[in-house]
Image (cartoon, rainbow, N blue to C red; front, side):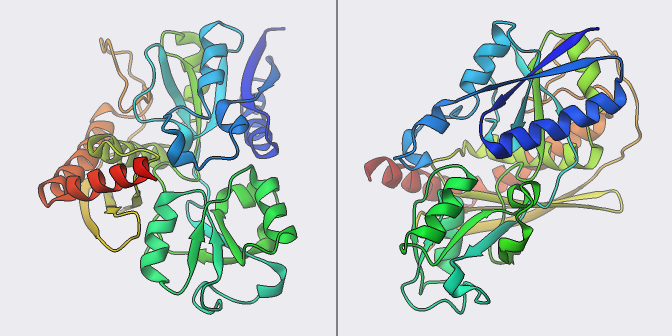
Amino acid sequence: MRVIRVGTRKSQLARIQTDSVVAMLKALYPGLQFEIVAMSTTGDKILDTALSKIGEKSLFTKELEHALEKNEVDLVVHSLKDLPTVLPPGFTIGAICKRENPYDAVVFHPKFVGKTLETLPEKSVVGTSSLRRAAQLQRKFPHLEFRSIRGNLNTRLRKLDELQEFSAIILAAAGLQRMGWQHRVGQILHPEECMYAVGQGALGVEVRAKDQDMLDLVGVLHDPETLLRCIAERAFLRHLEGGCSVPVAVHTAMKDGQLYLTGGVWSLDGSDSMQETMQATIHVTAQHEDGPEDDPQLVGITARNIPREAQLAAENLGISLASLLLNKGAKNILDVARQLNDAH
């Protein structure tokens, strides 16, 4: 029986996410065996520094990619938002699974259960490791203070409950859902309060770019709508040259053949911001392409079973929206945010 080795981070959430992808693959390929290989990444080890300060794009992916390169694993499951928009040569995202809730959620300290961010007392401290969340929420809720909190989900919830430092913390709703901790969610943040990170709520399966066998194996997991939304989001971020060290956020929706993309950039304190919405017509009819494409990747993604035209339209939408913001002066906001972040 053929064994497929699947790489994952060691955290409980990463394992749950990997198990869910393996379960889908097992259902599709009952004749294959899957072995899970868990490893620690740089991002799991450096816990005393804000993510945006480490300045490394592939914090949670590098060790996993190393194992993929050395043929120690055949595929790796990631949270899509951890994967940079430009992957190292030789790798590609071979599948993007159906997106779960992409929004951010607020978990309150037990003594503030029943409150919302709006009704928390003046100067309450809210924990988040994300510049994107802090910038948007500072603008919206100036009476609150935002402070960095690091660690995996279990660690952050423990810090919230046991230390008296935080009144609430902000986490991705999808992660809490996957862990079975929906009961801790006190508030879901909607786009007008806080737009989400590029790719948030979706899982990506990374494989070797030339491993046609694996590409075919995992390609069936592509969810067309999630894929097209995430191509647009990743193209927007790539064109802006955003990353962990600047506040960039998005919101996408697909309705009646139209893909809507809202994207924004913020200064670190949220005082300066710019956002716009654009839409594009997208036709999705399933197909399998074995065309002469030498490099079928778009923003690091390979999806031969989704029409190329639809993928290009989604990519184009992301680039067009980024260009619009850059033309209106977004570069200045991002440059200042980057400099300030580097200086702190």
